[in-house]
Image 1 (cartoon, helix red, strand yellow):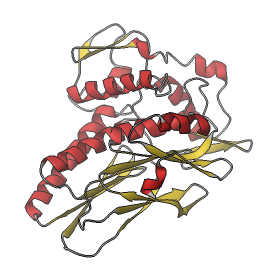
Image 2 (cartoon, helix red, strand yellow; image 1 turned 90 degrees about the vertical axis):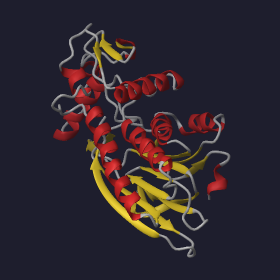
Image 3 (tube, helix red, strand yellow; image 1 turned 90 degrees about the horizontal axis):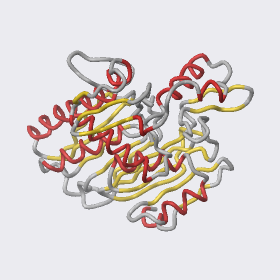
Amino acid sequence: MKQIKTLFLLILLIILVGCSNKVTTYNNNYFYMDTYINVKIYSNNKNLVIKAFKEINNIYQEYHQLSDRYQSYDNLINLYYINHNLDINKEIIINEKLYDMIKYSIDFYHKSNGLLNIALGNVIDVWKQYREEGIGIPTEKELMESGSIDIDNIILSDKAIMKKNNIKIDLGAIAKGYATEKVGQYLESIGLNQYIINAGGNVKVGSHYQDDNYTIGVEDPNDTTEIYQVIKGNNMVVVTSGGYERFYEYKGQKYHHIIDPNTLFPPQYMQAVTVICDNSAYGDALSTILFLMPIETGINYINNLDNVEAVWYGLDNQIYYSEGFDKYA
């Protein structure tokens, strides 16, 4: 949920089970959106897989550059350009993929009662500076005066965008999941249905290559060499948000990178939450907003959604589940 995340490797382990109808396993690694990404494809069509790996690189690279708010690229209007170079009240046509990603995020803002707010860029920048220096914490006044966080200052119309204030957009809670979903859709569109995409805390799997289940281990926030939960299934997404990889400490208190738009401070409800659903962009957004809710509130929220389950790792080191989670255990 998602600031350009230095994606903590929340998913520690993928174990493949089953041992019949052998196919060839192809692996390729990428690094985009501050995340190491591994893609496994199971197929006997080598030429098609080689073509797919090249296109996967293109997909991740394009979404990385479009959503990059810290770097500009030649002949590309991306988030950096919108945040730093686009004049207030000036409309500009943007790449359709970036437009759709921003629109998806704004729609989710309304579905989440404002918890997923891509307009938090100004506040995130303040926290980023403090985290990098590792000394002190910002005051509420400093955060409130850092710049607009009103998402209504982002105006979308006919593939164009306009800012009505000094807004800064941050797609860190959505971009990686959004791109990963596009990669999965691409693989399935060319008939490569048996795959694993492991993008840090975001795992998407297709059909199992041996008519079995993929088994995904979720790492323990207190000991990242161990797993605390095993999730089994196919054609699903497993996405984790947590505050235990990217943080700093001040006066004995940990301050992580996920910011509550209501308080402008990192929430302290849990150590991590993992969502299971069928869409990586949706899972990315959901895991972020769940991390911003008390666990009991989050359980009620998930129990009222279709085809979504979740597991929480509490501050008390207890594990909490949504009511239908058992089907993945």
